[in-house]
Every structure is written in structure tokens, then in C-alpha cells.
Image 1 (cartoon, rainbow, N blue to C red):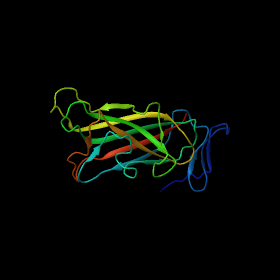
Image 2 (spheres, helix red, strand yellow):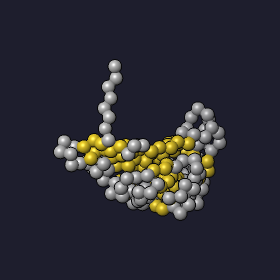
Image 3 (cartoon, rainbow, N blue to C red):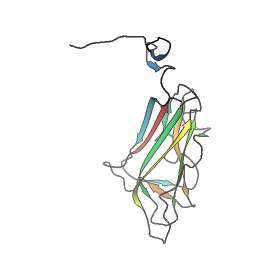
Image 4 (spheres, one colour):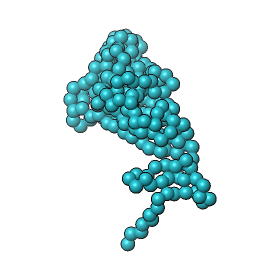
Length: 194
């Protein structure tokens, strides 16, 4: 035997704070949600089955504007975004002095045009995978993981993607020797009540 509770809203015991309300098509969090509460999590993954991606020293969405991006509509500009990115199978091509500079950009356009910095610094993940030493001291197969916390920039729908470039004017690779059984890039965006 199953039980059901039906409601249009969930309120605190005094009835003065709405914790959640039903619009008829979806539930939304109300103003009574405590600071630090997770309001929503949006994700995307990219899992090519062959080849690799060259990361050049030109800044941009080098994984591709349609391959790894999250679409999110936040409820308030007083909230925060926790943005995490995991990129597999990094290689510095067996050369010293190479790495990746990584951060996040957002746009109100789905093609990521007119992109804007998201977070406190352009490159919160600086010189990832960097190796200092003689040639031939390489890294292949490393997983790179970076994150940042940012203020919610807009309550309009925004598109967020990893933004990167190769460090030290030398190309590096992601998805090195990838196969159909391994290597998935992941982007996670969490809206947190401010």
C-alpha cells in the first residue's frame, strides 16, 4: 500500500517562510531555504571513442562549444555556483615545461559567443600537468581536475564551459589514446543558496 502527500507549498511551522512551492509544472525552492543549501546540480559529460584533442596556446573552448557545457537557470544572483571539471588522459607530449591553464567562462548564448569570465581569476587551474626538467619527462594518462566558486551572474539561462589554453606556447593533449571503454570528461555546476 502506498501513501501520498499532496501540497502546493511547504512552509515553516509559523507559515511565514515558504521552503518550496509547486507552480503546476515544477517545484521551486522558496526564500526560506537555509544558506549553503544545494538548490540544483546540472551536469554534462563528453566521451569520445577515439582520437585525442590538441590543446593549443590560443585561449578558448578547446574541447568544443557543443561537447562539454552546462545549461543552468539560477534562482538568484545572491547565490553561488560551485563549478567542477574533470578532464582525462592528459599528455604533455613527453616535453618539459608544458601544462594547461584552465578556468570557466559563461555566455547567455548557447554557442558560447560573447563569453564572460566566471569566478575570481581567469586561470584558477594554473599550469596543470606542468613538468620541469629535461625533455622526455612526460605525463600521459593523468586526469586533470579543477574547480572554482563564483557568484551567480544572472537569473537568465546561461551556458558554462571549461575555458583553457596550453601553458608555455606548446601544445598538449587530452583524451590521449582514448578508446570506447575509457576516458570521460565531466562538468558539474551546483547552485548553492547564498
